Image (cartoon, rainbow, N blue to C red):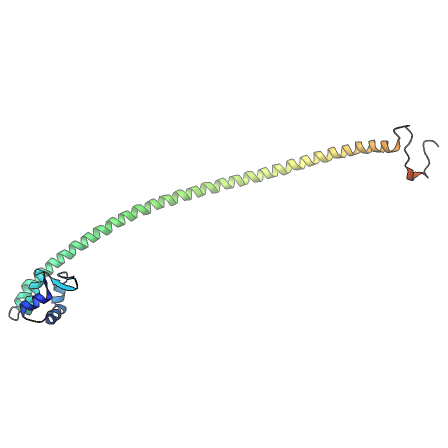
Length: 191
C-alpha cells in the first residue's frame, strides 16, 4: 500500500492534483473500497494505484481505464454481492430466532389466558357458594332468633307469675305483702 504523497512523487504531480483526480468521477467510484485511512493519511492498494496512474497517463487514458477499471468494478461487485449475501443470511437467522421467540411468547400468553379463564370460573363458583352460605346463615340466624325469642317469652311469663306471687305473698307469714308506701291500702284478703 502506498500513500497519496508517494504516488504523487512517482507521477511527478502534487498531492492536491492526486486528491482532485480521486474526487472526480469515474475514478472516485472505482476507488471505493480501495482507499483506507491510516493515522490520518490515505493509503491506496495496488489496484487503486494502477487506476490513479492510468488516470494521469494522457496517452493511455482511454485504454487503461477500459482495461483496469472493468476488472476492479467486477471484483467490487462480487465483493458487494458476497457481503450482501452474508448480511441476508444473518438477517434470515435473526428472523428465525425472532419467530421462535414470538412462538414462545404466544404459548405463554395462551397459557396465561387459560389460567385467567380457570380463575374466573373458580371465582364465579365461589361467589355462588358464598351467596348460598349467606342465605343459609341468614335463615339459621332467623330460626335461632325465633327460638330464643320464644324461650324468652316463656321464661318471662314464668318469671312474671313467680314475681307476681312473690310480690303479693310474704315469705315469712304467708300474708299479702304490703309495701310501706302503700300503707293506705287495706288488705283485701282479710276483709
